[in-house]
Length: 129
Image (cartoon, rainbow, N blue to C red; front, side, top):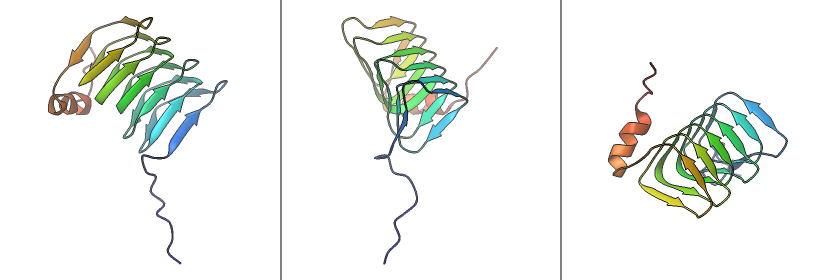
């Protein structure tokens, strides 16, 4: 019998449920859904969704970021960022495609570039003064 590959795929979703507080950096090869609270950076090779009850204090880096909750920090997406009507973002964002629904709150700067340029921005370390 062939053993199943133990490497997680992007089809796997990690869920931080409502009522959960997680402090620290999260790194995932798959997708992440945040319905609880995260204090720290999130880096995913897949997609990141912040549900309407979710709250993140830190940077989110992913392929596609869907924001329905609150983020205090920057968003960097290789493909696109979707801000739903319940979303609140206080921070900057970088993406190839940006969708902001009516009612969403965005306080920051946005940068929309070619995919190659975004990849360079995402992979470059932040310059902190």
